[in-house]
Length: 393
Image (cartoon, rainbow, N blue to C red; front, side, top):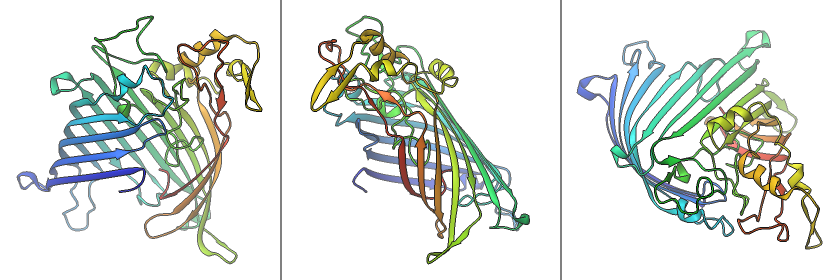
């Protein structure tokens, strides 16, 4: 229980199903209430039945360790709700996103762990693949498929091969895709219905808590927590997307002894790149862009000086259209340095990231905004500081 998140979980497990130690059956009831981003509060009540199959040896034989691979088959059913929206969140979108939604269907998770040490990996690799299908046949109110995969690898070199005296080059790639089907659709930021329609009773959206979010000390360190991706044009807050790509490179230096502070300290330099995208086709275009397409036409449109709005002549309509459709489809890059302090539960970690191309976005734009009622363009900060326990990946 905390100020930003309250979570409870009850599970019942059969560790050796049918007296076979390769199979584990688990029943789980899960509740989570968390302020995911400044946009909304996410509430989730979930029930799940999962069957985990160990691939390889089980670790029960003398002299062996648990097999590095497993696959879990599951049936999920949950009720998700977004609430406590920002006061200036687009009012037309609140009714669409705030309704409680049932999400249910089959899924699986594959894990292959070849790391030498999960807390301080120096060699090997780690792979996860998670798939889920939300379907009306399982009581779901939104029909969509999701796949999320991560591959991380670690290489030690230098230090004449001595443990704790080597450099470690670590890299990780995360890719996520969601595909709506049937009457479920994806809408650009701030848009209520497809095309020029004003009422959409026969369509459904992927619930806001089910979308991808990114940014923070364990994903893209060029953004604050969950601050990457498309944004609501009224409030300026992130609204997630159905496509995610993040790639991390990190060079970890051998431990050093610092004057007056002692041993156990280490340093790292890193490069993070990627973003959250509205849809998969936006991601394909965005991976080839290293900057937002023409953000200057909005940043120069209005300025705020001494409490008053000063309007600068500019292409108003194309500015709004750009940010609502393709203004967030680009790859954001961040460079940074990190300080680590070794503890028994993993390193205490301070990371300082500098975003080379921070996001520009709209704030205060609504469907009734006109050139005589200007909005306020803004830009995220370049510098971000994170504190955490454990390596980022």
